[in-house]
Length: 246
Image 1 (cartoon, rainbow, N blue to C red):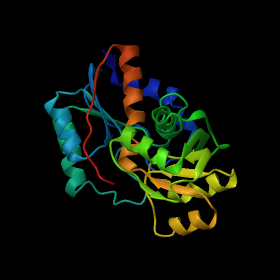
Image 2 (image 1 turned 135 degrees about the vertical axis):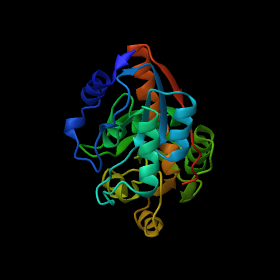
Image 3 (image 1 turned 90 degrees about the vertical axis):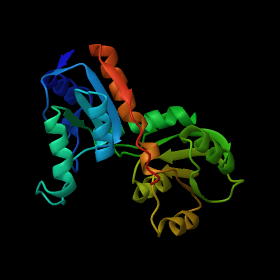
Image 4 (image 1 turned 180 degrees about the horizontal axis):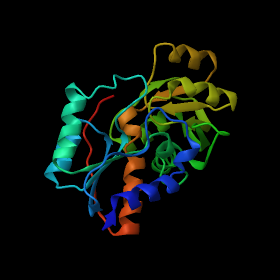
């Protein structure tokens, strides 16, 4: 068992939250009970995930995508009211970590994805959120590796027989970061989503592009973080995957 403020402080330091300028607040977003023993992790704080946390009698819910994003309506109405009301009524703490959980070198989304894809020598590209590493695969083989790892077929742009040695990736909605992959001469770039202009940009720069799913590529950081917290503080932890085809 651990105090919610103690847990918040530990995560703040462990994930180096102060080093990021983010689009939403990182840390304890909705305060619940003081003592935490049972935690649930998931990708996004939607109603289905909150309802599961209630069913599992969770003391805290950890997510990658939480509340209070910059540019959104600040009023607590509609589905935001429903979600926050459900958390408060059941005294559940909501912790959310966005960019710090993408970038962390041990439990982050990018390093966790590299481990599942078998990428060698993974490391960030400078001070960006994009990572690079080495493989010895064709594009078709990499696509199959991703399909097996994520249990979903990725959307692939490029020649199936293209030989890949140097690849770059960034989980989530990072399609615009393809420029970082191009800059380091990567043979392929993997991310979660794709925009209309990306296939042409990839083709004209002779780089393969793979859209593997925003949700699917970001399932693993929050799991790894909560497993770390479970081991350190003796907490019960369960990951709940609310299916999302995007």
